[in-house]
Length: 366
Ligand code: SF4
Ligand code: SF4
Image (cartoon, rainbow, N blue to C red):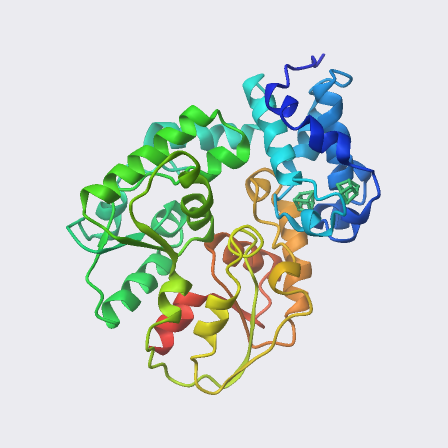
């Protein structure tokens, strides 16, 4: 039988937990609630579960784990919450307490063990520069590729490097480890997460890099929001779209309608909304049209917060709804490998709209 746990991290969130009025405004936006339809799968219910764990009124049983780990950490509920509750912080605090008490979903446990053993969640032995065939060197601009573009979505890494070469940037790859996002979202102890931060910052600094560009929205968020809480970086952090927005990109025309999906990591978490749209505006001939839910009201693709790995069917159902919203477009562009993968899964082989990462589109037209 499951036991109650010591909720050390949730204790620090007690004020947030006591502030929830159970109004249910969060129901109107929560992507997991819209699919599951059951109160524990919305912010309100997750507040109740977290409070129950804190007060030792409920045990850490499999259903509690399920509802706390089905949160994509998309932050949309925080936008709707009249009490301004930091729902994602509460959920992640609860997850840290669960992990500290020895509770982890099997899929997440396997990923965490791989990150600790090999520095990436796929368990790949080769380093990022060795895999991509370009060794680190001294340069002012560094490209932090991220594990997914290196080991699973190589086309994204190749397109980003191709763009940097086409515009004449002298850049370097980095001896990188996982940025730590996977461990942090799952709730692994911060000492383990911060070891990754320190090793990445040391590698970047050793190359004299002044500016680091990211093609992964998740890695970017870690460096932009999380690393500076503990480390003095000493270099600028730019998403590739922020870097490209100020460049003179001479692209071939595209005839058709383009829409853009804001990744939660980049949009609601880091407030980068204009730069990707500015890059798309440079494409001659393209008609840009927003989906009804865009910028801070953008719908989650369902792929974040460890949901894709632990609950792939739920993740895919959330993505299917998002793809449906873009059915008027020829191209559904986003700028995060997790969003691209998940939206493609949600499209279930439908040929239109074509789902593509922004860097791959730019590289194709440049
Ligand atoms: S909107 Fe905020 S206050 Fe209302 S139920 Fe949801 S989390 Fe609680
Ligand atoms: S962060 Fe997103 S998935 Fe999690 S409770 Fe809030 S709206 Fe739902």
